[in-house]
Amino acid sequence: METTSQFAANTEILLILALIAIVLSVIAVGLSFYTIISAGRQKKSHSRPSSTAQEAKELAEKLDSDFESRCKRIAREVLDEDRLAQQKAAQAAAERAAAEKAAEPAVQPEPEKPSFVTEHLYGEYDEQDRGFSVQDITSTKVARSQVEIDTLSPDRAEFSIIPDIDSSLVPGIKDCCEMTKGEWTDYRTIRTVAKGRLELKGDKWNIVEKAKIVLE
Image (cartoon, rainbow, N blue to C red; front, side, top):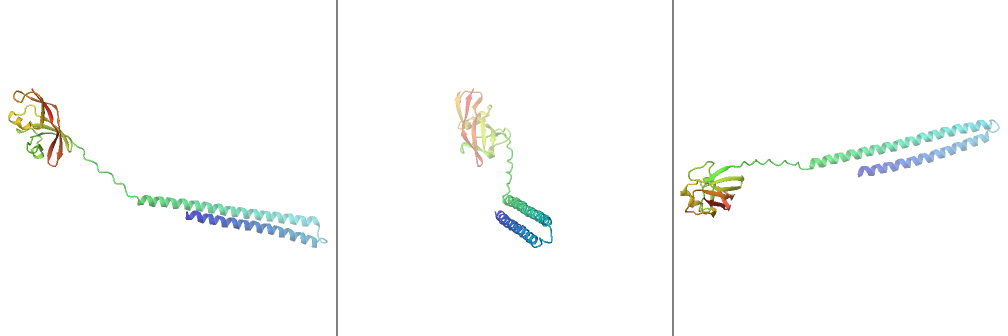
């Protein structure tokens, strides 16, 4: 904004100077013609009219040429000032843009989330805590294992009853599943028809939804 105002002021000054130069040139031409005519009248008896007219013509042509050159020079100066002002304005805009970009906070890339790997685990139901303690969950089947657990995310999993679970462990699972068919007193195997859902809270997998089983 400041550069534009300065350029406008410079342009006005140059235009005023150009008008002054034009006025002075016109006055000079008028004075020249007046001088020539006066000199012609005074020397009428010593020179020929044709010579005086020729001199006046040559002087007028010279003055016209000087006036044209002066006008062209003034026009070039105005154009040069305009070009220089535009270059300064463009440079100032580029510097402002660079400063604003440098002042912007750098965008930090989001840390890559570790890829989750599902696991197939085995667990023992804790009747008191009504869930599965993390410390009782193993990666391989052991003698006390009652359910199979498949992790879905760091804090979500699903579970099913081990089909060939030891009969001595069956009473411990009745609270974590829902029997839809069969009798606890007469069955050979346990089949899970709908897996139960678990949610990890602290160091325990809590039952969100019981598993549905059929006794066959």
